[in-house]
Image: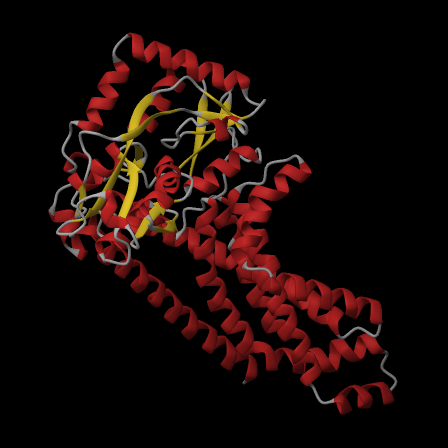
Length: 482
């Protein structure tokens, strides 16, 4: 028990390190807003070669904030999560190449339009598909929540194609290039920028886009009127003095290498690793922080549930069993969305993404830990308890002095396994905008379209860390059971 306590103490010491990763309080007196975006949407929102968020949207927002005297904290996540964060009051506004539609007006208040776009459709280079009629019986890949998806659905029955959905543009493009899907619909400038950056697609209607629409900055309906008014004033100001045109032309006229870096940095694995070294390190540190804090708190919660599970009280055992059943039965992604997006609407308070991620890990991993802790205690020979009680020891003392020390030794391999599972499960938290290792890879791929090399690097980093953790855990196992 003392050795286990020392291990938990070491993990506790890691908390202050991770604390530096939490959002810091704004000392500035200027109003600070939380703005969400989909950073896989170049040329409107993406990370450049220095891993800074740039794009038409980001430059417009940055210039308006400067002129209107407010600051903002940017949260990059999937498009759907970004919009849901605003509707649940987790964020104050969203700017993500978001088309203004009647359906969205029922949920959001939009700014004045800041960009007029149109819908294009594209196929992989060399495809035999020449017209929309050729899509009959084929599969079309769509990005969830986009105007391209809405337009494709409106003509789906007419042209007789099937649809499949993706959360980010790069994965969607790869699905078409690899032949799993046959075509895609999306905003024309976004498709053209990606093709200019090397994506092997061909736009079929570059001069005649469908159903032109307008982009707008959005806040939750009836909320943040001050922010919306500031955005509109700033937008009018940058349009009037020509700054707006300079921003748009900066991204639409420039070569892709201006933002993605030299070709040599994207054509080789070493070049990608070297150019994005700091981003990989930051992502890895965030992953480790989530893992250490998550497994530490989940272990405590799991041990409590496990002890409750062998209580003499039928009620307490029932509570433990119910909690374990509920949180083992919920998919972790659903739990993360519920805590980060659903719960704030109910309690009326914001939950930072990192805290929401930790709570998700504790509830999910703690339930699994509670199950094997209970099993470990129950695996101790019943004769041990009977012998302790026959010596006059009360139940609680018998548990502490006899059953638990033996049970914990039995559980050590399960703790090691759960530690590794927790590390891998942190990748799921990228869906709520936590910039851990997987989300870092997503943003880099969105910029350089080098999915194979980037994901190979991410996979190797995970394998190295898991191997080191396995060695460490095995050493701890031997020390405890020696």
